[in-house]
Length: 253
Image (cartoon, rainbow, N blue to C red; front, side, top):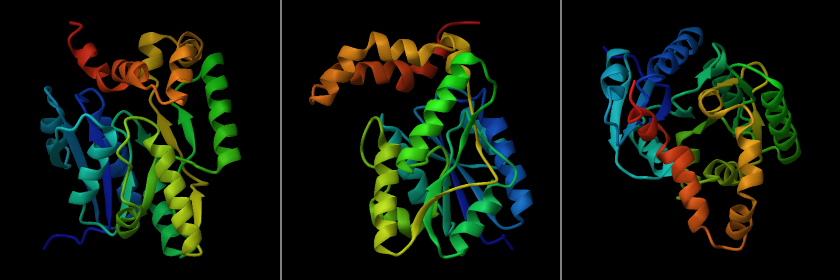
C-alpha cells in the first residue's frame, strides 16, 4: 500500500541534468527527517537533456510543461500535486535537512498562511556578501521572503497560484499570500531554523560582480520597463534565465 502523500515539493527544471540529482537528494534528506509522505515533482520544461531520466531514477515524479514562463511551469507542478502542503524550490538550489519538518510545523500551528525561507549562497566572496546583505535588508523591510515558497495547496488555489509573469512573479505571489493571510487572520512567515542554499552557478560562469554590473549596464532598460516598455527587459530575462541553460549546453565541452 502506497504511503499517503502529505507534502508535494515542486521542482521546475529546464535542462538541469547537472543539478537535479543533488536537489532531489537534499529534498530526500529533509523528507527522512520529516518522516511523513513526501512526493517530489520535477516539472521538465522544454528539456533536451537527461533531466527527466535522472529525476525518475532518483525517485521523483516527472511532469512536462512547454510554456516559456516560470510561473506557468511551477503552476503545472502544483496542479499535479497530491499533497496537502506544497513547497517549491528551483532545481539548482538545495534545502537543509529540517526544512519540510519546519514548514509543516508552522502550517499546522494555524498561525501561518504560508511563507518563504532565508537565502544563503553556497559559497561567498565580497560581492556575494554584498548581494546577501541586500537580500536580507530587502526581505526584512518588505517581509516578502521567497526562495522556498510553502503553503497549503488550497491556499495556492485560492490566490490563483504564481501570477502569469516572466519576472518578479515570486514577489507578486508573496504579496498575494500575505494579503490573503491577513484576511484569514494568519501571517506570512519565514523559516527560522532552515535556509535555502542558493546556487552560485551564474556567478561561477559570469563573475561574482554579475548583478551589480547588470544594474549599471542595464539602468536604461530598467527605467523603460518601469514605464511599461518591457521589450528590452524581456530580451535580458531570456538571456539570463530562459535561455541560460540552452547556451550552456550548446557551448561544447
